[in-house]
Length: 371
Image (tube, rainbow, N blue to C red; front, side, top):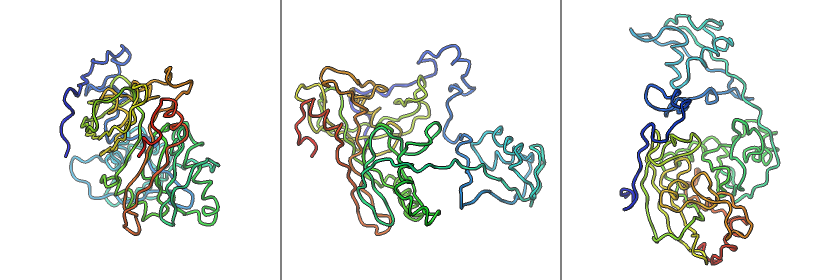
């Protein structure tokens, strides 16, 4: 179904040193040749560890199985084996905080475990989520799912440094009465959009719907379309790009074709219209995989970065913008999936927001370009 990258497009390699790291950066390069700040897949931070939630579990408990020769017996090393990806220092801190019990009693990291002992991990409390009146448009709702049009400029979910002002905080406000009546009511996030991206999102409203929607996203059964404004006038009507994406070795917040721990990524672009001045185009993107910044990086790789996307070569200022300062011009147009309860096909759509249309008008696009 997918070929190699288009003719004329070369997937660049990023050997260490090609990005000319500073002396400080070179000092932080690990034994495997990767920068020390780069965590390969499977390495987790303390923020990924389960947290206690009100009305739900506040501990993990299990018995030590039969220990075989060569297996670690120290408690901290055993926990690291039991919870792969977490650092030993984090697990040692849990033990020091008396959040790891052996047969209901606190112990030390150096404790030698024995078969049959019961290990209890008292989970750190989760941060309290704040309900806020965040505006969003409801596209579709029933007892199983909620589909909304996410506005540009807000995060999907609370994160470090962003505990409020997110779409999830808005969900808590929207469902405040239901949550007050039933604290176990489930609002399940199954996918995300970048902060500056607008468009359609679907949430699960029960555990079964969450499991089924997560399965569809994981197995790439959900068909997604995006609209994007790009620089330049593409010489193609339709084009597929197959270029693996990974962490940019020169910029930890960016993604690069052929970057560190690159994973397969495939997108089809369809040209819908070219602006009156010929310097901009409207594309519809069909991502077949769901990598971070996938459409943005693939558009840049084709020589047509998204308008407003300064991280990947786009501009926020241009004489043709008429004084408008665009955000990253990417809009999640539609999601086609199976309803998690009825199993019937369902296509969810979000209308193009006003800021996107205003820029299209200024650039001289045909109002019927989105079809």
